[in-house]
Amino acid sequence: MSSALLPKPQMRRLLARRMKFHLFGAFFVSVGCAALYKFGVAEPRKRAYAEFYKNYDPMKDFEVMRAAGVFESAQPK
Amino acid sequence: MLLDSFHLGLVLNGMLASRAFSLIGKRAISTSICMRGHGQAGVVKAEDFSLPAYADRRDVPLPEVAFVRDLSAQQKALKEKEKASWTALSVDEKVELYRIKFNESYAEMNRGSNEWKTVLGGVLFFLGVTGLFLVWQKKYMYGPIPHTFSDEWLAMQTKRMLDMRINPVEGISSQWDFEKNEWKK
Image 1 (cartoon, each protein chain N blue to C red):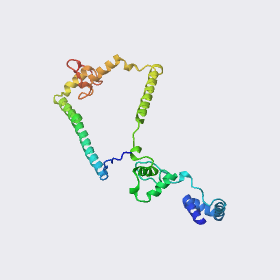
Image 2: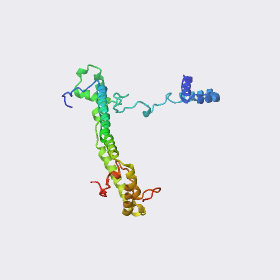
Image 3: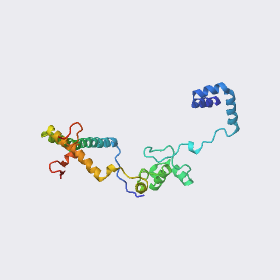
Image 4: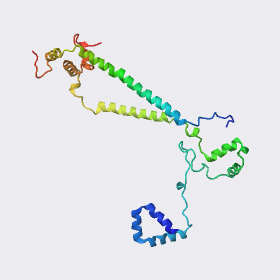
């Protein structure tokens, strides 16, 4: 056993320190996850839908599908 | 005193049992306890496991009993010395007093081990064994897969999905170039 003293460990405010760390951590992790989802998933999806419907002609789409023969009630001409 | 212990027994056994006992034979039972009490030593010897025990636990810093129960003559002398001024104790004597009271220090108690390697190795090994078993199953046990998984069928299936414009915004039809009739790069 060495006779040199160990440095005195932190005795007080242990829970306060832990709580502060975890409160900050939880806040930033959750905000980070929300931001990642918004800009990784939600915004691209909204853009994709906007792009698709910008020049969408449903009647033309229907005629193409009818010509391919996928409808039962509308036979190809 | 006999009736006190009997009353305690009743309370411990529960009220319903006590009703039954008081009806059957209160006097007979207290007589038998009386016979047993005076027949032997008088008090039942406390078993080891019923006494407070020592335990190294992170959440119980001061266990109910000291670690060393039966002190040697040297340790007894040290305990006598402890009753005097503590500045007279050497460092080794202080450590000896600590080891009498406690088994492992917190640092020793919390030490890590290499058990995780064994656990991980075991898990991976048995996953491997399972994999081998699955390979054997596919080769020797299962019958043929449905004809709808053949390449020709899958091609026809995909063509029909594209014709129907399945998932045109983000899904499969958005990956196909309808003008050039090929997959988008």
